[in-house]
Image (tube, rainbow, N blue to C red):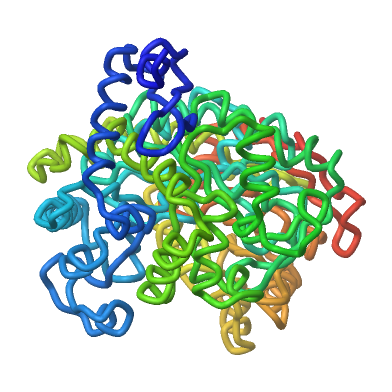
Amino acid sequence: MSALRRFAVASLGLATIASLAPAVAVSAPPPEPQSAAFTNLQQASKALQGMTLEDKIGQMFVLFAYGPDASKPDARNTTLYGVATPAEVIAKYKPGGWIYFSARGNVENPTQLATYSNQLQQAALKTGLRVPLTIATDQEQGVVVRIGPPATQFGGNMAHGASRDLKDARTAAGITGRELKAMGIRQDYAPVADVNVNALNPVIGVRSFSSDPTLVSDMTAAQVKGYQNDAGIMATAKHFPGHGDTRDDSHTSLPTINHTLEEWNTIDAPPFKAAIKAGIDSIMTAHIVVPSLDPSGDPATLSKPILTGVLRDQLGFKGLVITDALEMAAVRSKYGDAEVAVRAIEAGADQLLLPPAPDVQFKAVVDAVKSGRISERQVNESVLRVLLMKLKNGAMFHPYVDPAKIATTVGTPASLATAQKIVDKSVTVVKNDTNTLPLANTPRKVLVTGWGVTTTQALANSLATRGATTTVAQTGAQPTDAAITDAVTKAQANDVTVVLTQKAWDTRVVDPNAKQQKLVKDLLATGKTVIVVAVRDPYDIAYFTAAPTYVATYGFAAVSMESLAKVLYGEVSPAGKLPVDIPVAGQPATPLYKFGHGLTW
């Protein structure tokens, strides 16, 4: 039986791919009939056969460019790529993927993004290769979003973990995915499948659903189905083999996860297994060292024992493997950029995300194939996966979107109302020792202080609609002594103070001098009514246990502040339960509040 015939009769989650190279197994779209999957294989194989080696390598790169318009020059692009416009970047490299960042000037509004996506696709189709891009972004929701309002905002992963509602998690992914698709974005680098078992984890935290592997697994699978089955875009589970137990941030240093093999199988592996079972299209690697899986000291992104031996061979993943950003310090700490690119592909990566030295790294991969260090068979296998995903997510034959449809798809009243109901279920009241909550529905003066310019104002706005006379005194993540004194003075002149903390536990990076902790303690010392709210990690309370009233929202977007206001005023009963243990400060093995704790009325 031919390889193509074997593909046509294969079960729907697996496909045996025949190409110029020997066969390799990759994912086929579960919703499609076998004949459609067979057609995808034919189309992908045909496209591959027309490619030069350089064309193939281009499909293995995921790039970005500065600016909001494909034809607009930007000197930063010239510095990075040697050409000035995004369209010229595409013409030069013919990349397989593209990523949007708000911080790099890509995002103005959803309509602009839809137009920009069309411009980029037009540039890709003008090349001799004529293969559209898969455009992606990191719209995790919660604390990591690239596209803010008017796009629908949700509370994020740990907020879902607090509500325990799998249906809501899937609904949120479906809404997010449909909105991204309307903007021309066919891949979301979500959900985060890491199990956050370390309260001092500086990079994951509330990006994780929970510290419980079963809850993370169930939530991950639900969101995979929301993105892929409901919205029709690619989901990407990250960060394999699991970034949930580290005190180091892989953006700035190389973390080591010292889990035993048994611990890895029990804690870190289950969510990725659940994602694979749910049909996940793509998995992103982590720049972390896991000695129990590979004692070499190489980060997982560069580890063949991990990416090929564990992810492919043991877990049976047949989809697309993409690296985390290669511009991050962790993956660049041991080898030069050229070697990093080659080793990532040798390890089993199909696509290289955000190479920091694109000319050097592109040439290094081409040279590695020409020298025989990387086989062209492996390149063909990777590019076939890339092409099959473009066919599955619709980019291959329908690369363009209609910007005029943004208004009826993105941030609709129905989606916003659904998001609010979902987030309402997540707010967790951890302490209410003096029965301060719920607040009586009477006029009062309320000071909103602490972290977040837009967050403090959003909460003040929500409280004002409930009859409060509000004052805002935003102090930032590292309050000055003057700002603390000002907040204390204002607190004494108000009936109630709500103080918002953001990673107040992180005295290494976020708040080295523990000024947020001092702010809370000084406010409590006034003797006035003080409500402490952690708007990111729920762990902050360990550092000011004297606070009699403590609430966790897990997110700081306006939607979360509206839910907080509802709980404060008793419009909804708090339903969130801690999805993690909160340990005693300095005693990580001793819980202060246990998983599942949460007060209601």
